[in-house]
Length: 262
Ligand SMILES: NC(=O)c1ccc[n+]([C@@H]2O[C@H](COP(=O)([O-])OP(=O)(O)OC[C@H]3O[C@@H](n4cnc5c(N)ncnc54)[C@H](OP(=O)(O)O)[C@@H]3O)[C@@H](O)[C@H]2O)c1
Image (cartoon, rainbow, N blue to C red):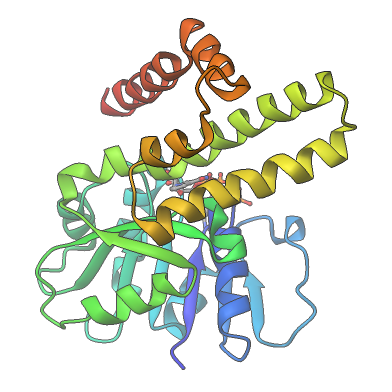
């Protein structure tokens, strides 16, 4: 089993580490951040937290760089001499930092280098990870696919779509959770306590997503099955649309995208 190191165990990095831990109980996993006191001990002897990035680079085969976008290039420049082009597969999950910028920072020409855009559902092995890479001289695309398959589903895309993937997949978690929160609030208004409403809504959202994932249909085909003519579903749906439901979501997604592109 190859060793996986995550540089920058913050919100995303830690979610990735937890997901890998579940999938690979016997793997040696390494995570870094400067204040490791903020990381909860996993209580096993195979998960190692340290602030020593150089040691983790030395120990690991897969290096996932989960630092904030504005720090990643200076980090790579500072640590370039510790990377081993033949051994390491490097995956950046930083938003907006291109493969070319990373290659330039590392000063490598032949390197197994990828960008990934997972989301925090990696924690429960339900991430949607968009992946992209240049031509890999070491031909490790399959291994990178397997690595991210371990924490959810994957899709390979052109690099120019990575920012769109950030919005739809990574920010998407927040949009869906806000939608769930609103449904829970509605559920409380019609009589449920918050805990029961949360349970009903969460499973309903999971079921709706599974209908699309497993049956491969367009959402409207499933909606048609629920909307009895003159029934209570269609009047509620239409009321939501009169209040700008779909429009608000689309506008929010486009606004997030414009912010990332700036
Ligand atoms: N959050 C998401 O849902 C998400 C989704 C997709 C992609 N991303 C991308 O993932 C990256 C991280 O995002 P995040 O939300 O997880 O941010 P975050 O919570 O701030 O995590 C970054 C972590 O890096 C650590 N760090 C900073 N400097 C370090 C250094 N020199 N060595 C080791 N660790 C260092 C920080 O901890 P210390 O201050 O203790 O060092 C922090 O825990 C970003 O580039 C973001 O674009 C995030």
